[in-house]
Length: 432
Ligand code: HAM
Image 1 (cartoon, protein in one colour):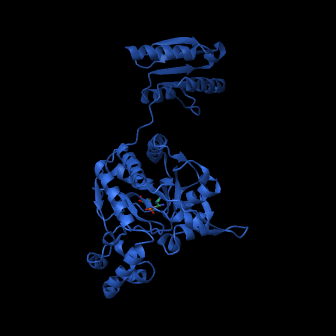
Image 2: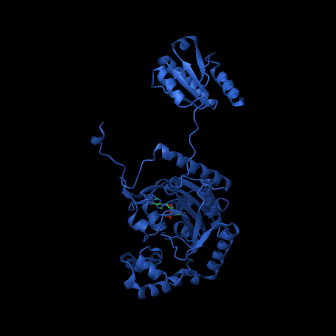
Image 3: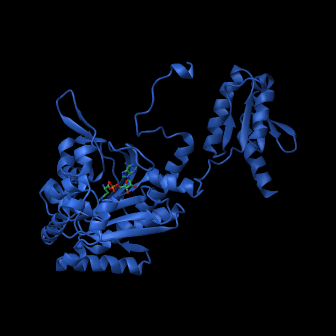
């Protein structure tokens, strides 16, 4: 089909993950798995679609995510389902539905997969993107907040991102936040004329969100606003103090950001984002974000269970790795190439390939090519140590030719013994 006749495109804000990019995904998934296993986070996969009401209740009815960014669909059975815009409410549902309340606590879970938000696409902001998500249910201790930060921070360091910092704040809880909200609203009302249009609306429905508005005019108002840290109750103050002490003890660079509120409704006490300090200005630079949410499990499952978690944005991490010239490990080069001539030789090649795979010898063959000369040219280009040649005569003799690509010397081996011979030759080469 000619290119000009082809009209389909991936949906706006969504993209194909091509083979080159897959190496980054694999690398991040491998590092994540290593950390998750070591720190005892168990893997869980929840459905990509969930009951739409789960997010209304969990993520929060007046958040941007639920108000503007959810992909909602009505099924043939008249159910309203949403493509998950985040993992957290799905984890909470799964925790209750699968009886994890009865498991030894804390219950620590993680997942890796796509999430969907109908946002205005820009660099680092997509409509389908991937998150690595960690949650810990059942403990209110500050060390749990730190364990989540520690694991994500070290995964990023393991990926060779070195200029990290954690922005951290406490947004109080149901005891102290309502009082702070009143103080804040009183101040913001006195400044209403100086706020942007969106924040004028936020003042009525979600005043805390004004604190992280990036508009210049709002920034001026915010810089003089009362700060939540001055209005925390004793319990929240103590919790936050411990969090900062642990960050100090672990030498994790952090920035105390009293304006960090995060755009999801469920947070209590600690909120944080992990950023790259040298990422380009003005770009979406939060590589990961999360916090404590001690009231959400009660809201969804009617049980008072504290929790804390965070998610890392995979595309943002990959973009940053590429900008910094950090390469994902390359697929190892093949050691052997099998060149074949004729249909019977092709099936013999498949048999041999499987034997070599079992012996962990990386091998390449190009079954849709016929000319031996061309195949050997490819073998040369791939810089393999040995080529195995199966021509018509070899098929008849049930044998193969093994060619040392450096010296050009050729030896013959029975088909049965081919793998053993190759192993010896590779071993011999390594010794030299
Ligand atoms: P979030 O801050 O909305 O938190 O998302 C976490 C991370 O996902 C962000 O720091 C960012 O790296 C990435 N991200 C968010 N939106 C986009 C987008 N449109 N395109 C590309 N990347 C994006 C949550 O989702 C919470 N559920 C985290 C959490 C878990 N809190 C407690 N537990």
